[in-house]
Length: 302
Ligand SMILES: Nc1nc2c(ncn2[C@@H]2O[C@H](COP(=O)(O)OP(=O)(O)OP(=O)(O)O)[C@@H](O)[C@H]2O)c(=O)[nH]1
Ligand SMILES: [Mg+2]
Image 1 (cartoon, protein in one colour):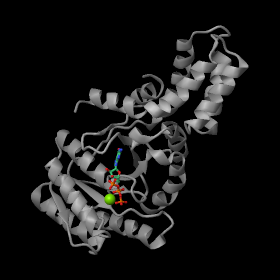
Image 2 (image 1 turned 135 degrees about the vertical axis):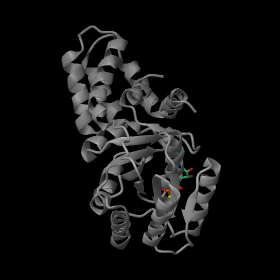
Image 3 (image 1 turned 30 degrees about the vertical axis):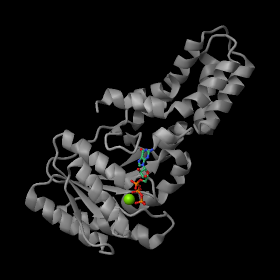
């Protein structure tokens, strides 16, 4: 799938968020900047989970810069500009060093880790890398099967041990295999865990240390996979994952199923982490690198 059609899908996925924003705002718009419009703007941004700080900035910018008599298009363009200014910094190209790179995927239960590992593997192969998927979620037997099936569907190799195996040992084995067989991108799927479960969080630290010992450096990317439908709750999730592995970026999933797509803004602001990819569906091609301008356009324009 081309990036272009991906963004068409994102536009469709963000339809619920967009309708929540634009419908009520358009109803309140009388061709002028009045109190009712500013109030409605505040309401719709908060409802889209844009967060209080971000909302205040957009409302202030509109109050200050929008002319008294104005066109709908001017209003949209101004909101778009403010949101874009804040999201630009969240865009980062994936820059893997030459040679073997490890990408570690972590997150709470059901956030989309396993699916994202397969999607990113497929994406990396298209970028000319040789990916190996690693089933370090040994907690559930079904998780291993799931990754194997996704790997098969994507035509990518999967390294797995038995259910119950030590995840550190799986990663150790995977790195040996990658070094011996010339794989240069090792994507590690981990078990979903609540950030409050200390031993499980320590297990992630252990996986990181195995990678350091075997390759001489930390995993190139330590990615928190975040379900966009949880909105701003992602912020509290991230903190302890950050302590456990030192996050380098986010993968934002399920943007197709949310009315709270606006939460991307406060999440990025609070975490100061780039968004590496966004996911807009269950299929393997439903993934693309994050582009701030496309995202804001999808949020505000049909
Ligand atoms: N609509 C939609 N569904 C998604 C997306 N990404 C993943 N899913 C679905 O979300 C569910 C959970 O995805 P998984 O990849 O298994 O999540 P996980 O984080 O590995 O789950 P655990 O291993 O149990 O913690 C599956 O049904 C996926 O198909 C997405 O971008 N959009
Ligand atoms: Mg999983």
